[in-house]
Length: 259
Image (tube, rainbow, N blue to C red; front, side, top):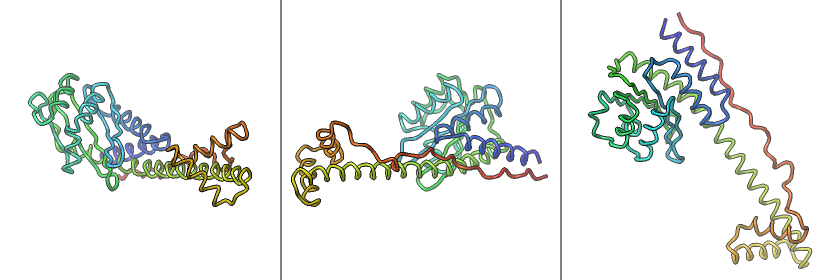
């Protein structure tokens, strides 16, 4: 009963964080705030998103936790990197005696941590999330505590999958807007060249492309410079290419705790 209640509360908190987030960084910040409020004094947390096609993103509940993440990502060597590579939890029973990850160990010792544990979960293909718990005391990291952590990280992974799907959609939309806006500017420049040279659209595009190649400048920039030289003002972007306010991802309804 108690575990079900804790799970339902964690899911609800993550849904709230997801609804309030405008991106991955905001969601990670919400995750560590919630987690830090539910761990004992002297215990710190950090969460890191590992992606093969992007730089890692992370958040820590304290400067010490953040410094450990920075040291690990800087050397690409540490418990969370190992956890992702091996696909299972990593427990550091004695930070002082740790010899595998020198940069991470130095940061952990400097921050006053004595033990640590990392749990990883796959978010989607080529993307995983790690949840690191660091303690200023000699913790035993019993099986029950690790199971609870793994259940929590599973929900974090689900929330991240929704957030990343939304972020990828927003990125694709931005790329499409940029492409369409660039084409609009080029079309305007083609019209100017046709009027000045009394040539066809095909010939005008050839002139524009030749200028781009000779100057080693993007065709859109060449087109914009041409329009500004003729009209005296920079080319305008059509209103339909201006981004609308982004909608935030919707969180699903919270499950009811089972008795």
